[in-house]
Image (tube, rainbow, N blue to C red):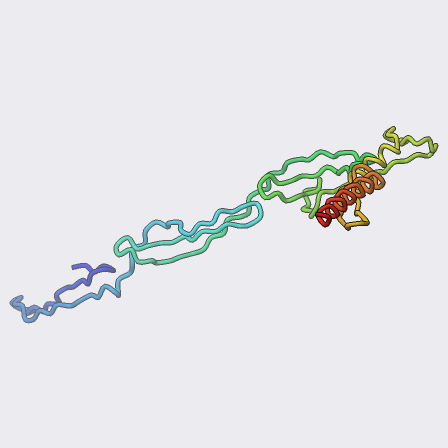
Length: 201
């Protein structure tokens, strides 16, 4: 009986007379299964990790015995990185008040940023705003034609805050310091009257 990697095999070792062919002895020999090679099957893929545009992927190529399902070999294979999905962001000119930018690419998958030479960069290539210019001092920007007093009011309303000197409360200033001071003054007078009336009662 033929041995496999699962089962022992065996054979009979027999001695016959060379003259009359009579059987003199018979001994059964055992072929142990551990001494028999496995029968390799087709390689299968396990533990697969997909590649991305930033990281390599990998998988394990495993071969099992077709008889006993024992693992014969296991080899890790590498999957190369995928290509980036480039999306072109057009250049935008700077203005007096708004930053511009150079043309650049962004990967639609990993969101990495690249310059026009496809070299990865950390930030969008910004072109700083030009700022207003008024060489003839007529109060109008020579470049964008905005009335500069209006531009200053817009900038002030967007960035300035007011802190009341009476109560130290800070609020966004969209009216001007004098108006807000008057409003807060009236509020403090009303509170003072209410408190006085409470004490009188």
